[in-house]
Amino acid sequence: MSQHQTQDITQAVLDRLSADADPRFKQIISAVVRHMHALAREVDLKPEEWMAAIQFLTRVGQTCDDKRQEFILLSDTLGLSMLVVQLDQARRSRDLKGATEATVQGPFYWENAPVLPLGSDIGKGMAGEPAYYAGKVTDAAGKPIANCCVDVWSGDGEGVYDMQKEGDAGMQLRARFHTDAQGRYHFWSIKPTFYPVPDDGPVGAMLRAMGRHPNRPGHIHMKVYADGFAPLTTHLFAADSPYLDSDAVFGVRDSLIVHYEKHAPGKAPDGRALDKPWHSAAYDFVLAQAK
Ligand code: BEZ
Ligand code: FE
Image (cartoon, rainbow, N blue to C red; front, side, top):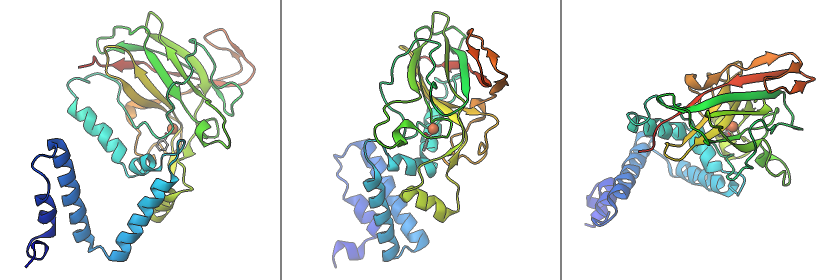
């Protein structure tokens, strides 16, 4: 009798892994085989159901291009991206003690956003209410980190990212700022609003089949990094936004929820005069030393 008839098929696949394979790859691919086989057994997967899953994953791949990353969206909406962030933080918990918490990056990060002077307004001309962001970046002992990059991006006041706009909108609502000698940063953008993750593709169909909404609470993304420190990828969430308790990608952490104070038209802390209401959000970031 041939091997596949006499042996458990899961064990047969595992037995074919070369002893010379990279040990970490071996650990991961073995777990993939075991868990995928266990899944098929648990639900008694039918051939037509597995074919539908293959077609779904094919559509996920076909939906990706240089501006759209449906696989990240799939990972995010299934909670896997946030789980990986949490595992990473738990594994490094001693080194990251006291540091600002991380959350998912999401699919809309664009490298090499313009480097702008502190105080610049990246929300000018964009839909949305103006918001003034200010704070400092320190190490865990409270020592300011000068010349630290605060790389920010968000959707506009209607929750739409530049990458989602028709044609080539170019970079919008993105910039890199560098902290001053006291570790301070400040800039203008807009107050972010809740928005749906892209739901016109296969992941949107999956969310609907699950009976889930696609919305994320209002947030602004930040990467904060400086030489000698562990880089941080995080968001600030608006405390008054809907969906804080049901973020479509499970990214909310209490420590990242920020109160946006609303102000009447008038003078802002940097001397700017505003003829319409504006908001301010203050947040101090803490970076851990790189190990
Ligand atoms: C975002 O916040 O930009 C995002 C995160 C995960 C999925 C889709 C969008
Ligand atoms: Fe976002």
